[in-house]
Every structure is written in structure tokens, then in C-alpha cells.
Amino acid sequence: MDNSFDPIPKKLLSRKQSLMLHALGFVTGDPSIRIDYPYVCHPGLRVRVNEPGDSKWIYMMLPVGKGSLITDIKIAYHRTGIQSHVTLVRLVEQREPVSATVVYNEEIKKTIPATCIIGSACHVVVNNSILLKVCMDFANTDDLIELGSVEVCYIPEYTSQAEYKRKEAKKVSYQKEEPIAGLLNGSHSLNLQHPSLAELFLQRKKKKKISV
Image (cartoon, rainbow, N blue to C red):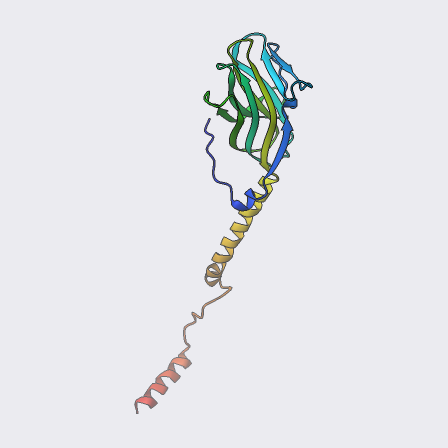
């Protein structure tokens, strides 16, 4: 998937907000994945598996308003074991329960530190409900992946602001073109009338007097 996108105007970037969530919101439908929710001995969400595999998915709903633009996702991450790690960060848009569309997908390099913040820059306009999906690769059942804070950076009401800017730009462009169009349409009409016969006769008479 092509994750390239156009730069966001500085004026809109200044409106960026951060939604601070906890990994406690992650769930899974895979019976081979075991989630240990925060406990007095560990404040984060721990993910283990009953059987190894490279497609272990967990999901979190993102409560971001319609028309917003999601720009960044940051996940606090820790792992034990060299071979087990997070492999993908994905955003999925869904409305009907029988279908969903992948709107963002980024592969996470294996070389990231065992404890770090996974940062993923994106450009996703929210039109329907959005799920954050994290895919993990577990090499064995003894490994552990622990997740903490989840930060979602977004620009609220992005689509309405972008539409307003487009209308304003179109309005300014029209105002620049309007005087020229007005000259052609008659609102600022030029004096293109031909002189009458009487005016021509008077002009010739004046020329004769001047020459005499």
C-alpha cells in the first residue's frame, strides 16, 4: 500500500490534537492469543500465545470524530525474546459488519529496540468507524509482548476546514478574474462607439481652421 501523502498546511497542523489511550482497549478474536490485563505487578497489557505464529492480531477502536484526519500513531512497546516482535500497524475503516477496508498499513522493522515507542505517520481521513490493528510474530510460547500508552494524533474537523480553504481560494481566484471578464461582458464597458457624421464634419472643419 502506498502510504505517501501531500503535506498538510501549517495553519491546519496548528490545530492538531492528541488522543491518549491505554493498551487496555486492545481485544482479540484469536483463541490462540492470551491477553493479561494490567495488574499490580505489571501496569501494561501483556500479550502471550498458546501456539507460535506470524499473524497474531489485536484490535482497538479509535474514538475519533468523523471528518478528522489521523496523522500519527504512537505505541509504547516492550518485548522479551529476540524473534518475537510487532510486525504491522494497520488502520481499518468499517461500516457494514460484513466488510472492512484497509486504509493504512505500515510494516515495522525487526531492528527496533526491545523497549521503544513505535511511531507511525499516516494520513487517514475518518469517514466511518476506525480500528487500530497490531500484528505480532511470536516465535515461541515463552515470549511476551507488553504494550502501554497509545497516542493518536489527529486534526479535528479536517474535511470541513479543507473544504472552506478550497472555497476561499476559488473565491479569491474568481475575484481576480472578474474585472477582466467584466470588461468583456460590459460591466466595465469600454467606449468603443464610432464617431457620428456630424462629429467627423466638425473635426474636419477644426483641422481646416488650424491649417489656415
